[in-house]
Length: 124
Image (cartoon, rainbow, N blue to C red; front, side, top):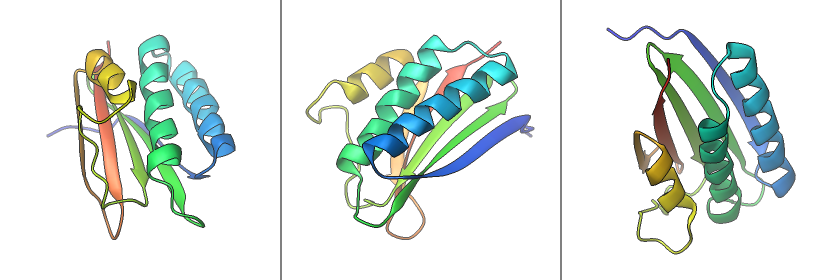
C-alpha cells in the first residue's frame, strides 16, 4: 500500500497568467517540501503550458496536483479537453522534454469531459 505523504491541489484559470501562477505555486511548494526543483519545475512548466495551449475550453479552469509518496513525486494536470489525448509524436517539444525528464508519464481520459496528463519523478 502506498502512503501519501503530502499533496497540493490548485485550480487555476486556463490562461497564460494561470499557467504562470501554477508554476510559481508548484515551485514554492516543492521548496517547502525540501525537494529538488529543476527537473520537476521543467515538467510542471510544460504540462501547465500544454493545458492552457491545447486543453483550454473558454470558461473552464485546469487543475494542478502534486503528490509525494515514498520515493515518488507525481504531477497531474487536468484540463477540459478529454477529446485531445496527447501523444509523444504530437508537434512541439513539450512532451519530448517531459518524456526525457520524467521516470514515467502518461495521459488518460479524466472525469467528465476532462483529461489528466501526469508525470512521475523519483525523489530521495
